[in-house]
Image (cartoon, rainbow, N blue to C red; front, side, top):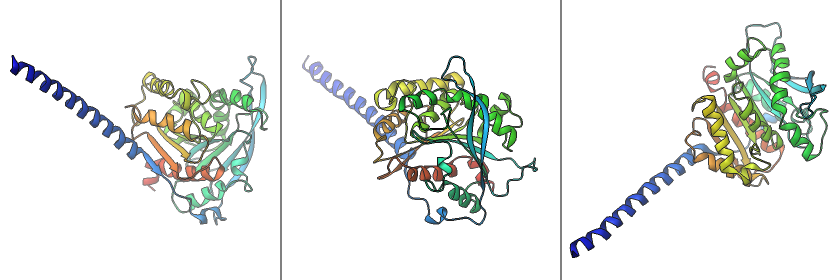
Length: 332
């Protein structure tokens, strides 16, 4: 009897030890995955913000669209800006280009990323292409705003939440029927077939817009660059207030669409001094715990001391473009 009384506590202790070891292994695996997926990024080389010998060109375009915030969806015209790399030849039907769509943040407009007084993105792209850091690509700066003017916060949130319709039905068909991307035609089938050559990124509310593209246009886009922003599909500031529910929703998008580990890549950028840090980091930390998001498809780029500004965006874009379209880059 005494022997049985002694054995029971020992067995109980063994069970707790095994459970503790299992939990420790799981915690260690999560920490290892997080470390593998997180990178602290440095500044862009200063020379990349000087004039390049082989500069690209920026073209303003106007395209037909609709105001998707209204039930009647009235016809409107919208503005976008297109960066074409040095050497782009509209008569050359053989050369094809990867494409990045970029979305601005709140109080900004479509042209701000390409405005030399506010941003060094254009010369940075020129140098990256010239030095062979990335293959030549087309970059389109668009707007979720119907008038391409700064609007109230609530109006901007309303407009960005339906921008996926404009991208899919109007902007992409307009751009990719005129410029030489990998889409062989401006059709859903052609956009789906060429998704591995297409990226979408955005800053602040543009990052929120980017997450909406992941949800609604994943069949058209393989690469995503949310900069200083989280997913609001479950509500405003969803990364902070609903991280579990938000990531549940994102996982469901993948499972319902049949997307595997290598069918998409997210490059999330944020700075430690960015006021959006908490809501972004909460979402990403939750994503690290899920099997659907691995080092193959989720990369977390952090700037120590990084703020909520264009300077940070330049870094995110610089590193992300060298991460995207990797097969083409490695074959150069």
